[in-house]
Image (cartoon, rainbow, N blue to C red; front, top):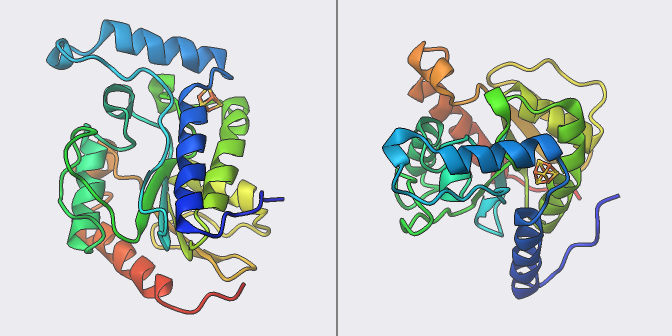
Length: 237
Ligand code: SF4
């Protein structure tokens, strides 16, 4: 059962900040702790002068968001470097440009913690908070991190639409929400939850998908438009 939600905005902000602090100190998955630190130590040549974050990455965005976007995990040289989800990598370039085109972000780029990016009505997080080797968390690691997903979603009390960025995020959300039967994942597929919220599936904005045309800007824009449309309607609970 989800923990009780703070009612006042200031309480919600404080609770989210406390949760973020707790997330960034987590060491529950030995393999991921070792990997995130190893990547932060060895670095990519292009970022050799930067100090990597090298820790778990909490969610980011508008605490009153109606639209919550869920990714897989931080990228080794993206979120694991910058400390903000989908920040400093090509996937983030695609995602935040789409959020900006949809009017949900104040700028189309997301490059660093202090870049001035603000989201309006949207919040972005990852199902697993540490960068995994080869972008593949194990089922055990996903389960270890699930309580953070549950608690962060509970604190975002105004959510109406959950956008699952990729099949892994969809599986994590479906498991968390007890979605049965689970409709098949596909770009644009939707699954209604009993409380009136809706999960919308999107192909992940990974380079593999965007370079090959599997995911185009138009396809991502269509998902954002549908999310905004559903977020504007009445909530049943
Ligand atoms: S993946 Fe989640 S549970 Fe595992 S160490 Fe990172 S923050 Fe903790």
